[in-house]
Image (cartoon, rainbow, N blue to C red; front, side, top):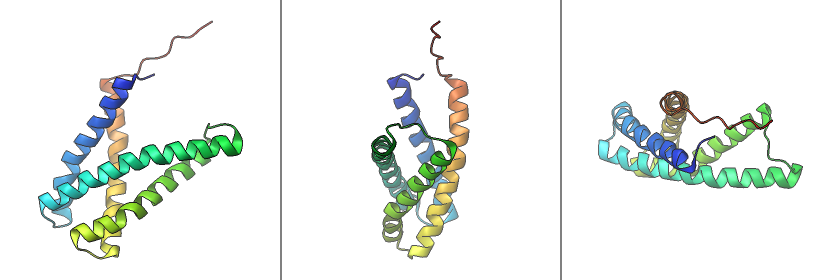
Length: 142
């Protein structure tokens, strides 16, 4: 299990490294000024982090209320991930379109690119983080 400090280090380093990678990459890919994209990425990361907390809290409460249990099967985890991403897309779509002065369709393409990037990034980051900072295995009680 990871300590609270380790979880905070993981979350903060994930966001900082992600922002450092995605800001220049997407500024170049979508032909927008680095500063504009940087502000949008930081806002997006802040919204995503806040939404992650709220969504997971509500999701777990609903599971507990409906089933008396918060454990998630593989199909439920897939539903959880899809609902999270769709809701985040809906939350961020108007912000992307407004801030960058693009159409909702253009903003949708950008958001899809962000989602694909962050799914791949999360996989690689977590693998690297677990290699550099292996989680402690809880001691078994006999």
